[in-house]
Amino acid sequence: MLFTWLLAAPCGATIAVTDDGGRSVELARPAQRIVSLAPGITELLFLLGAGDRIVAASEYSDFPSAARQLPRVSRAQGIDLERIAALQPDLIVVWGSGYAPALLHGVQALGVPTYEYEPRTLESIATSIERLGALTASAGAPAISAEFRGRLAALRQRYGQRAPVRVFYQVWGNPIMTLSGRHLVSEVMRICGAHNVFDALTPLVATVDIESIIAARPEVIIAAESGAIDRGALDSWRRYPQVPAVAHDRLITLDADKLDRASVRILEAASTLCEQVERARH
Image 1: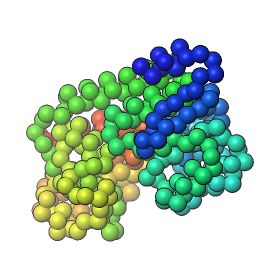
Image 2: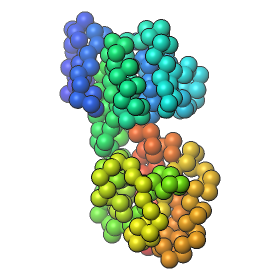
Image 3: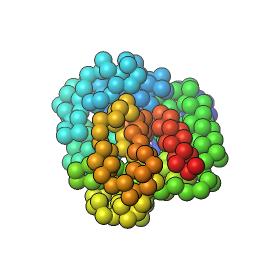
């Protein structure tokens, strides 16, 4: 195991892991000054006990509450590279698809060891816990990843083989956008025995029309909002009572902070979704 090697390694040995982009990340010692460029990454670093070593974070890094006090150096539209350089980090952890390629190149050009976090499967979240645990010398990482895998396996066992339920996931309402089967959220659906009605789409995120959604006859329609607060994103669907999800009042708002951040709390969102899908199943 990676952690056995790390704890047994002689003082001064290089720590090396492979990130989600397939690149090697090497540190001469466990990271002491970390820049986190996504809210989910910030959550994981705090969970690993490295929160006090984060010197700056991205906008919306608000969990746990201590993360709200961190200086902000990025938002969806930009990254303050000069400020990051001035902070002299020894590790940058960045969400790969969260920024334009030019911004990612700018981060890499700083010459600081950079870990690209881009989990495409739920299993890869557990793997990244282990890898980030190695880079931060987190003694708790093996137990955290093992617990995550255990909870994931329990959800699969309970719901994964049940009768499929057709689900439409609405990312945006105007234009209507959804996710393909390659997205992490679609795997969350599959755990629940749910079928993404646009599973076969090629793009990770795609625009779809009303007619194709009605034709797919989803039995559950989902949106995600911060705090699972229903802000009316799905209200317009009530004009289409011919859609089974509307006829049976299965318009569900999940917690975007848990579902979209690719951290351990995604399993809490998965559990909620599985319960809603189970109700639709009956």
